[in-house]
Length: 627
Ligand code: ADP
Ligand code: MG
Image (cartoon, rainbow, N blue to C red; front, side, top):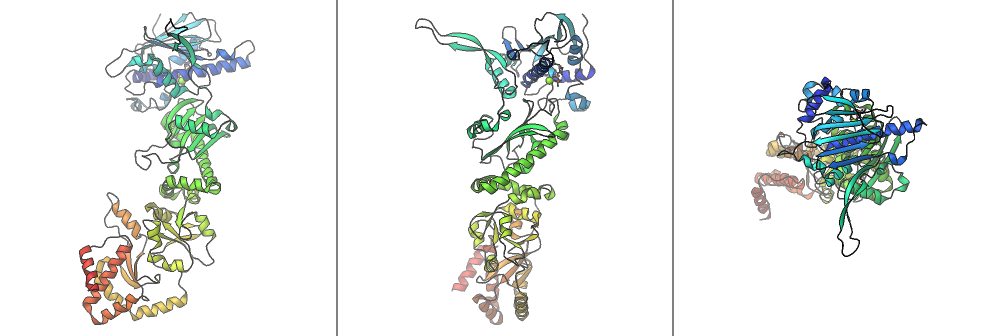
């Protein structure tokens, strides 16, 4: 009997498998079981359409058995089997079905990234075997065949004895090496765990002979170990079940079983889509962010199944970054098992699924916001930050998807409000959406800059997170209303009358403000009488795009240019008692004037949470005033 050589492409894949240093060699079992399942699918279909074939439900199963003595592992199915030509075609060639055809030679050299990411098929058996024998009998032939190969030297095909239709793959495991214990694939527990992990939802029973302890029959005899055939997989995946039959507990325990998190999910979304693309999915919104969520280590992604077979543990392409907190699984019969990660990225079906999923998450969050406000706020506590990042991401192209999911604290009630709520209750004539930034609700609430806006009866959004102002800058406006910081130059609330009055006052006192400006030099861009202060003496305002909060954040960023600075304007309240003293000092006592000016400036820094340059000088100045 002649030994045939593998077709060139197959040879390359084989070599890759044989020399594989890939750590997840266990996936070979997933591949063989999925082939068995495919073959039973075909048989199932044949029996349905061909009356001459009788096939009973209980005949459809996959049997996995280990023989420790001979170091063999056998995977047997009652599927459609292969004719001689099919054996030749399917097992001698990989290019047709494998992912390899899409790969260039250079890319498969180490094979590291290909294996395990997607179906590598039948040849993956050679990661653990030094010999593979296949006995198969086709439903279309009375003759059975045996295919055998040690990988390296090609393969042989010869007629063989086999009673029933189906295929039996026998793997002779390699000898253990220092690094690798191939014996583990003979251990009952290990095999069970691998089957559970990758093939739990295969819709045919995967059976194994399992050793169990049989209790002693009476007091004299001892407990005995007996073999019992058990079905290892659960077969019906939760996502294929009818929503109405499932309870919250079912979803919660699935969440836990899958190790999606230690918390309880705040919401689950169960989808069964039968449109341009067919898929089932269960998605979870966790309650708590995982410990590494806001770090670079966090990997987003959903489990991806193709007809019940796990093909990827974390398919990142299924989730946009701003919904990276979502956990769950997607199962689609429209995806091929043998698809590489690179191919997946461009797969039209997958893109459709991803888009669909994005919209479902969005609409679910929207209805949670509408109907379960408290729950939504808890969600927002955990993941609101990610949504705000999402606004900024990719040049703001997702902002329309996300803007209505945002919540901010507000001056109206110490509560989170949506932008829509804010805009809807804006009084007639309010030109902008006002906001103020600071470390906490209370600190912002006391900011002098908010006075005039408060006084007008306008609501102010309180930005307590560093990301807030950046996100809003990307958003620019909401329902045609621009955002305006209470610290920005023109608040747009002065009447013409006010303006004229202020201008004349300003002219009168121009000299004084000029003098302070010169005194402070580079520290401020300008010194002006304030239009926004009522009872407070001083504050800082800014001109241009960069606010004081943004300056703080930008300066903290590693590798950031320390020169990033807000254009600060010192504003002094001309209606405050302090102004009288300042004016008197300006007219009469130069030393005192300098002292006052410096004190006012330093106070404005403190209000903003900025540090004074020289705290000792500052306190001494204070004492001078007191003395
Ligand atoms: P794929 O499953 O993606 O087609 P594989 O490398 O896993 O690629 O398998 C190659 C081919 O070998 C299959 O398409 C199938 O025709 C055949 N084959 C493999 N295992 C079996 C089996 N247990 N029963 C019948 N045919 C099989
Ligand atoms: Mg396969």
